[in-house]
Image (cartoon, rainbow, N blue to C red; front, side, top):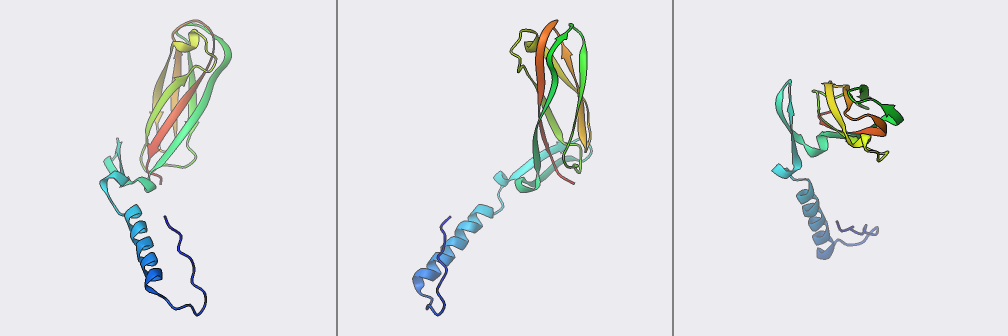
Length: 147
């Protein structure tokens, strides 16, 4: 957006200056005007679809280390929890994906199961499907409406 120079004291306002002001206001209006692209729809279990402005939604990208240079047995599970930095009005939508930061074969064969999602946090389990040494974390994406 163009910056408008401030007028000097006693400077007469001319047509060029008024044009710059009007143009800047119009550009600002276009940037903040309501449109369907500036809304987020969040499907909540408690209240159904909620449509809010994108600026009113909260998105958190989280990371939780579950095992670091650990030896695991196939079929074993490790629980994790991730508290949110702010509470949400409704339970948010949460996605969790495993990260094989150790690069091992056993780290490639894990499953993430979310057990509960509340307005203040998420709890889940990482299931190890292959025995071996691994280093695994969970990437978590949370989208919701803050309280």
